[in-house]
Image: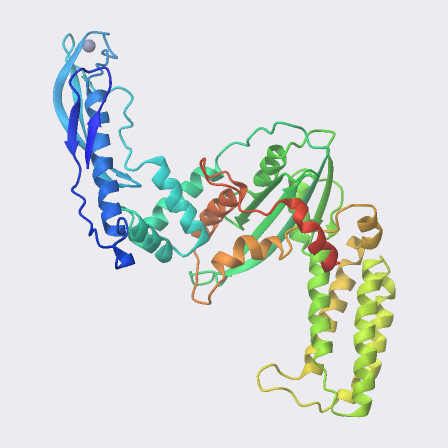
Length: 451
Ligand SMILES: [Zn+2]
């Protein structure tokens, strides 16, 4: 394999890259084409050859002295090590001295502190946002001739740096103004790695427009990241103007409501149907697990299952005040499950049901002000909560940061990694990396089912 440089120069320069020798015998299919080690070696050598040619051309550019404007001559040559996607390359570039005033000038527009290419930085951050640093480092080393940033610690450092840049980035001006924007804000917890910080609160959310525009955002509480700034930026990015109609959804936490107020969202938020539906789902599951070993239990179970369904219907239709009737009725028939025996692994079903109902009850008592007639909204084509079906918190945080109990985070590390994760999902991490969202329209049927 030989590279031939073509251009204005009459003498074509060429460089031998590698000799490729593969068996002719295809009796073994493993002999077909290049192997991964060969491909990595070719990439690395082609990269070196291309960079050497580029550096050669760049070195011919002569800067003018920035002090007296005089002519500069080559003073000496310096090697710059730059990590790229296709291996670390050495770029040989001259330094210059002014003939007039002896001032030293660097090469024309060469970034003096650069250690890696933006494409490598983005890929490292992108992979780290999706999988643990150790796994990401392994994938990179497995597929590409990457030497720099192989260790999980280095990868972490690079990723957090990208996270910092993303946090401080400005809003992308949208092409069109949005007539309406829905915003959801939610919170979850991850495990902290420092003493006295066993649980770190993470606030996450998303903004959506009727035509499918979407941005997610998130921040760990008590870091340098201001979540209200992120909310304002997300709104700006999807095209919020003074005429945009804003609807906010959140869960029961008063802290989240004050964050929305800080971000300039003045209308009171609606309790996200997602959070109610989750709790009702727990109750429904517990009810379906009740024992049917005695005739009176069979009858009671049927009553309870129907009543849980009615409870859901009442809340969905904005009759949450009557929900207490359902809860009382269930309590009345639950005594036949006294002394119910549990499964070895899943526990006693009636106790689980009791706990689940208790949670629904508490939740409704605390949040009654923020409940609406969800059925009416839904029939009018209005949103009843987030369209991220598994919930924004699970989607943005839990999948990467709460996978196993062993994952513990520093406040800053978790916050900056979250910035990268949001950018990946927003399609904001460099060009060529697409959105990871499904189109918003495909969520309709699932939302209806959740309702
Ligand atoms: Zn000079």
